[in-house]
Image (tube, rainbow, N blue to C red; front, side, top):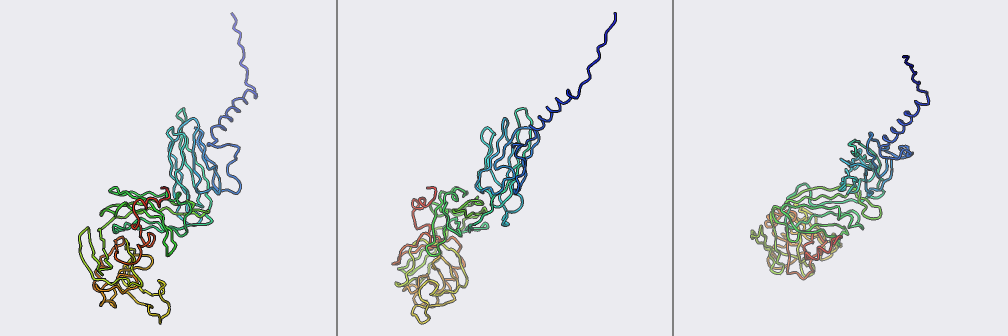
Length: 420
């Protein structure tokens, strides 16, 4: 029997083109990096780069790659189609356009791990890179990167926190953030503030303004005075918050401090005495001469703000007298001055009034003591100590005058919160 051999047909060039086209389509679909290939990478005039990824799940990043001028409050979102997200980071590249160290952006995945959303604002004028890992339904894993830039702040706001640098302070000092320019969006700022204490202490934020300086601040005050030994940590995620009218905060604040001796002094302005207690025990009692009937001392709860071993005090600085020939004019270098209000109330040495100590109030509003007594008080005084005055014909000191927070009830204080 004869076998007939049928020759195999050689593939034509047309037959070769089919798998080549299919391969190109496959590569085009898997290398798109979670973005529309029609986008064409960077936009003219912008910074950053288009998202890049290995073949795998389709990831989308918002703001878009190469986007410039992103508002600092814009949420960053990362989503995956038909897969799950793993780690997502949003990190700054270098310093901001005005030289500030920018913040990294935090966020969280949804329960299904399909979407990651940021939970804070970004530093103005900063390039950010998003890096996200994802896994598709077949187990294939990919990494996507995308870069965009936030808009620079045309106007900025500054903040001064108190206390700082792991200080040990008295039981009356609130946590305080004072702003260079008044904040109109108080709720946005307050939502960015976190306070932790060990042991747990109940309290709340409250907004107030110093009646003398006009400086606005937000303070955290406990329900009652701080317990001695309390450890306090403030985390203020403020960078990128618009405080109103496009005026941005640029920096976060993070600091810790602790509470020391419960030192509370009681000034009886009618009896002309000052009694100092520490942890509930009387340790010293002084004769004083406080504000006269014409210039009475404030009543109420005042907190030690600062102290200076020597300070120049003038009548003109508190609006009493500018003419050297006036009866109430004074211009003195004063020793051992402990400040308790921003309006100019001090506990200090007043040797010129020695003959009135314990007998008559003859000062222009301060609490005067002998030189020796003032030295003892000055050496012991700590920022945050309380001085509680009573017996004057003057009103109770305003809550914003120094740290007068304690001159309102706990319920009244809660009502000062922007989130109440």
